[in-house]
Every structure is written in C-alpha cells, then in structure tokens.
Length: 271
Image (cartoon, rainbow, N blue to C red; front, top):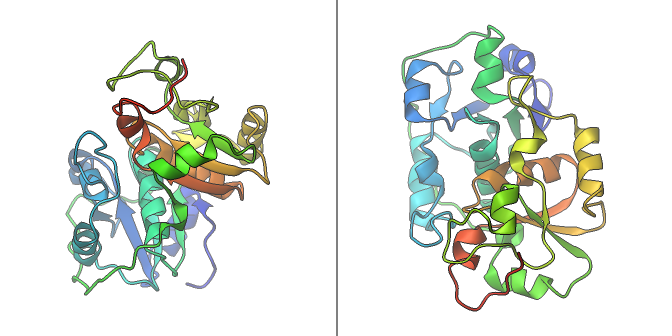
C-alpha cells in the first residue's frame, strides 16, 4: 500500500488503489446485486455469514468456526488492507468492520462511502464475474473489547458515563412498531435512526462527519462518553458503530440488540 487509506474513502480513492495486491475488497451486498455488478476484484460475503442466525437473537456473533470458514473462503490474511462496501448505505459493511475489530485485524480497513451506489452511479469500473480467491488457512482469535453483552448493557444503566445509541426507527424506539415480544427501548437510550445518518441525495454516502457529530452531541453522545450501540439485530447498528469509530468515540456494539432484550421477560423497558 503506497499510502494509508482512511477509514472512510471515496470511489476515486479506491479506483486509484485497485491494482494494489495488498488490498482485499469485500462486497457485502445482496447476492443478486453482486451478480449484476461489483467493484473489480471484490469477493462476496453473504450477510448471513456475519451472524449466528440463532433465534431469538439472530444477530449475535457467530461461532468461531463459522468466522474461520468465511474468512478462509475470501482469502483473508491479517496484513491485508480491507475495503468493504454494501448496497444499503453501510449497515452490513459496518457490521463487517466490527467483526474485523472482534478478530483483531491488524492490516487496516476502509469503508467505501456510499457503497455500490456511489461506485456504480458515478461511472467507476465494474465486473460481473464472481471472484474466487485462493483460500487461506484462518484461525481467528476473538477479542470482545468492542462487544457489549446483555450483562454489560444491564450494568451500564446506572453508569452516567455510558450512552446507549438506539439505531432503530422512532416507531420501534417508542414501541408503536414492535418486532419482539415487547416493544420500547432500553431505559436511558437515545434514538438516532441509522437512515438519518445517510445523505439519500448523494448516493447513500454518510452525512459529513461534523454534521453527524453535532447530531450526536445534541443527544448527549460526545467524546469522553462510553457508547453502546444497537438496533434489532446489530445490522443497522453496524453503520452507527462505524460512524462512532470515524468520530473517535469509545464504542461497543450490543450484538443481542432488541431481539434479545425485547424477547426477555424481565429486562427493563421504557416506551
């Protein structure tokens, strides 16, 4: 890598780096989107490979064997610089980056701002043929420093230095839309819908970081606070985890999210 890539990069930056053999480009789009169009050289990861799929909390971190199989299949090595994107504005891409933090990836990573939307609509080169890299021998070590589990969230409720960022819709937050046995939100959690962090008039890029910082500051999410972010299954909150990292915040993600919290009979709930 001739120059270190930033955490959030634009399509022209990625295009200029495509020939670098230390780059691993990961597409976390729908399979149908990948088959139709993808960044040259990008390997495909099905979003289902990033989650356990075990109900009710289907979005929990998978078993180590599942992660080993996925990373091996895409030709992962810890020294690669990974560029990841999706077709929805960054949820699955952010979830992949969180997973890289879980395994302690050391080679660096970037998010393609706007994903395949900005890449394709702004006329950057594309491929349609699937990329099948040589498999690597992967045995990841899981580091839970960026993982918040149920007990961590419960313990944080009495901690004034911890803020819980609920990335779901306002309707889910207030309980008027319900996807679990109980509706509402974790007591004290603040709500900023992940969709409101994107610029839908600019090919689903993130809104400018200074604007996002102001939006979060209005909710009390500021530097010096410990942040726990979640949604229903830690998919949408993949993006909010990424945003918090881009802003230099101390962030963890609650992978059980509301699908765990809202399906338990005795967790505290506000509406």
